Image (cartoon, rainbow, N blue to C red; front, side, top):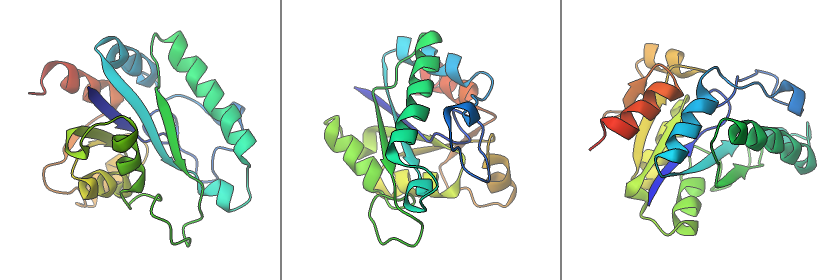
Length: 180
């Protein structure tokens, strides 16, 4: 099984400094939905792992998050793709949880649920915490320059061994055709 874990904000959809609070604010990054469609058709299991501290902060509730994700699922479906699961951390940054990235809890939960070794998982993210979470679990990190990715790269914070791509479509192309 080929598992690809995607961060949500900044990878699939546009990020917002004030959080995505409704389906109307969820806007896909150009090319991201088609990339997920291509990866789905190529046999990848697609899983989203996202920090959603807006729940822990009381900005939105789980019902609203589900509505946002329903829009995401529908948009991915229209592009010929499928997201097999969405794992999220609802906790605020000051919570001492194991699931908030950069902790590896979400990645380890995904590996357990899909019965794969974490070392066989790839994760595409746009932040240092995404990269740190997959590396801590023993998997393979890929950074995209969308969202906060260009700033992370420019700051020189990219962990050794991380592959860097302009956007999700470029990373998808590498995963499907260049990855050994």
